[in-house]
Length: 105
Image (cartoon, rainbow, N blue to C red):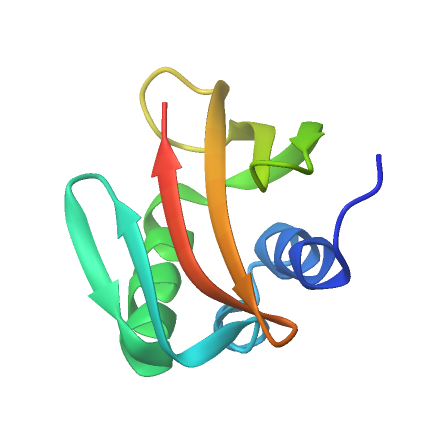
């Protein structure tokens, strides 16, 4: 699978539960939409993923990547109900960073 470098870095950071490295994949003014909530800016994104890592210990196994749409399908497993589940990660990339990420079921 041919993932953009920044998405590969995000997957690696998630699987290592490294909240700082995860947040560093995003532009300063990036947005993340997950579970009905919006997280704005790198600091807020780092706080969100740090809390999620502690609560769910979720890891990602990439299954498919749609290059035209910038959508990664990944098997996500952790300590949450229904694990594992296939989630879709909808990316908007800009200047080598993630500008926007929307996570859907």
